[in-house]
Length: 448
Ligand code: UGA
Image (tube, rainbow, N blue to C red; front, side, top):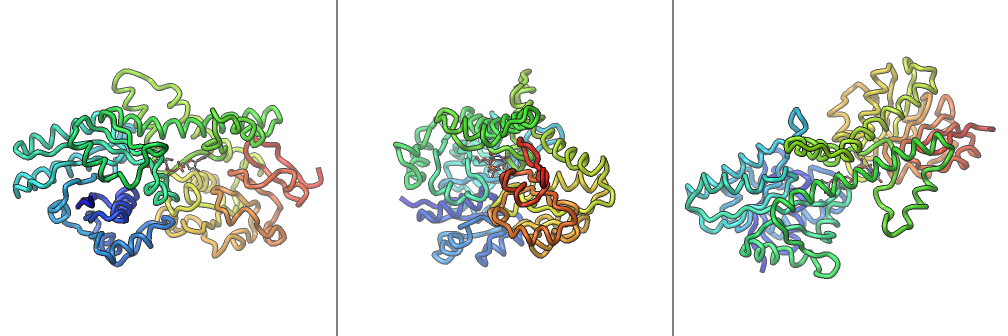
């Protein structure tokens, strides 16, 4: 049966979750403190670029199943389940700061206690939070509203940007962290249209295991990438080709094909932050998670090493050099630039005196907000190349894969490409007459 829900926080997780719950017939009140965002959402405009999100947002808004508000009291008033989809930014020491989660849970409990709302039963945390947070929130809510019967559960999300709508509507699994039969029954019913007992199940576990599952998933994905990045350096040293090695191992079903792409490192708002928080959380119980720490270190070195290769190619200094950078988003199909390897690369090149002209299909505005006029912004991918000493590829957007090579050559000063995402084959680049440097493969030079 369709339910009335509230989603607190309309960032990536909250907005996509809210829209997808509405798509399955629920009435969803979405609340955010950002008034501009709420006004845009009321007009049916998505504040983020996420494929497939805007049409679903508009349809459910039109059908009256999605309601946006800045008022927490209004948002939770009719809801039986409230999802907390709030930021958990890193503290100075890398720990996840959960004060938004705690403050909001307290505010909800105060409203429930004051207004005597008895409909509200379940508070579900969907953000990535350190182990023990569900328990902490439960204790807090009991203290603030002792006579209200609010049960707290964990339900981490596993969606990845660029594919978030599809992954939310068809999740690999839904993890519910709760030992309370009533909570489990309600969440099972809510997720019933999203899951399938055989290959996309809803897994019920205790709240701590659910919280750790989220960190474990992101750390393991990051670990695979760092493994390949470390191996790519080894391949460069011994004359092997990391892409052939990748294919060679990925056909083993025990290894699989995903998260094995070498590059200039992983970025985004989740993987880097979550592995730092996991490391920190282990330190707090007197442990060090050595593989996770190595994963973070290899990731930082990978970018540094790429910059060193560029610097070395240009005689040890980048002063007065001009580069075209293709790609600014932390990965394709998003305008998100949080912890983007492209931004880190650009900052390192600028610090060494280089001038940058950049192009990205979606992340120009988000980059402008961060880098302002420290770089130049091109109209299209080709005009970024005008007068540049080299092209640097930082994000693997599909539209970069089959470029007009003659157009590229006519604009670059020298036919030099540094490819941080292995978009092309070295042999092909040599035939085309480029000096081509990529990740974990031999560099090629025209006519050699
Ligand atoms: C990640 C996880 O993939 C999601 O499952 C999780 O729910 C989400 O974090 C979260 O915690 O909210 P996301 O940050 O959107 O999702 O990005 P990914 O697609 O995982 O990519 C992360 C980074 O790894 C990107 O910079 C990407 O370029 C890089 N990457 C990915 C590689 O360098 N190589 C690969 O083979 C795959």
